[in-house]
Length: 105
Image (cartoon, rainbow, N blue to C red):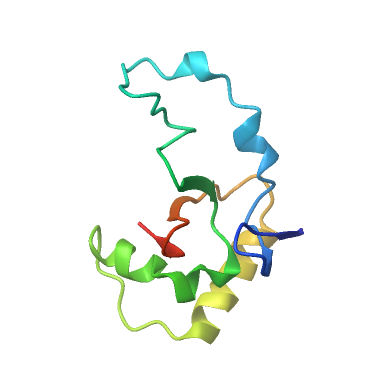
């Protein structure tokens, strides 16, 4: 599936972004302040499926803060992305993009 992302580039989502829109907000039991929710993370922040272009938006740098990543080339990232995408209903990697800087945070 290809869509036009917020920054105007033609990108490929890992899964259909409508899945996030169909989530029932009542499943989130925590209390949030200032209108922030899991599906509305804040001003100029957008929650969405991983895109193939996120390699260049700092996705791996954020992932390295959580786990050991190793040295992954753009080709390696794209190959893994396409493998995950081909396994429908298996991978639901969600990112938050700071739209003011065009980076994954």
